[in-house]
Image (cartoon, rainbow over all chains, first blue to last red; front, side):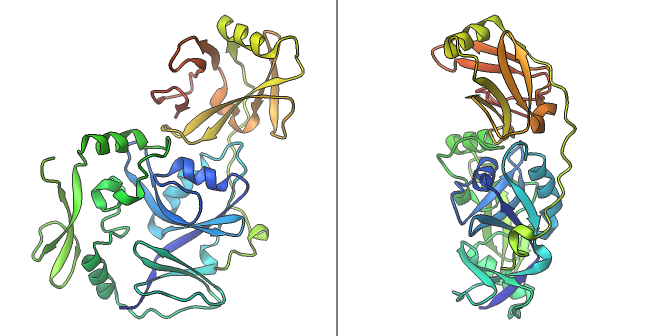
Length: 219
Length: 126
């Protein structure tokens, strides 16, 4: 497989409260580098972000198409907390490697459930080795949801293969009551599936198989 | 990662909400509980703030403090100093501080006319 450039934003959060701020507003337990999901009051996804600790700061790496709505969501929540936001998207390019990637000068590499996420300075650009079709085939093969395809504002984390990013024991966050109720009742509506082609209503279409979000059996 | 030399990079401009001159009330029960908590010492103040988080997006933050670095407005009510951070004043104008005497879920409660919804425990609102 190889390396694919993602269409991502990178926000840098600094201040003493930046980790608790992100933790209090997202589905996963955020104590350091991890992946989490911001949800609205209906538990629908605002964006999935990779949280990367950078010294005393944290970087949030999400999907460029969802940046404005996430920023609007976050900015309105900063009140007396010590949190400063910076948009460092223009300084960086974001890639996903399907194989282990060794960190070099000018880049930060973290392993995520999607693969190795690489945030590289513009001064040290990398070259994509995968086409979009190859990247999609990799995602289909490994049941990896992606923003704009499966991860959209129309679904809950449970609907699109992000159940593992919803912490079972953490305290309140926006959307938590709904997600907890869905989980405890075992009724999660729809789920992400991989099916052989042809697939009606596929979210990602591959050469032989596709991903789709379908109603869960029994729901 | 190039974080734009981090701290020196330009911060995203946050349009801070307009500071509102807060008016608030306190029920008799809440006053009695504060009298128990403070005793005769009036050097401390009750800080009533709002933090992000909770099921509904904002959480009340009640603290007894001597001083704070937070930019606050000070209100005297029923003989107590109440501090309200200016950053959350728009969310707290008109609140009533109450005390609910219950074994479970009891304690200080905020009745907030600005809240369009609250979570079940009453600590969070939007």
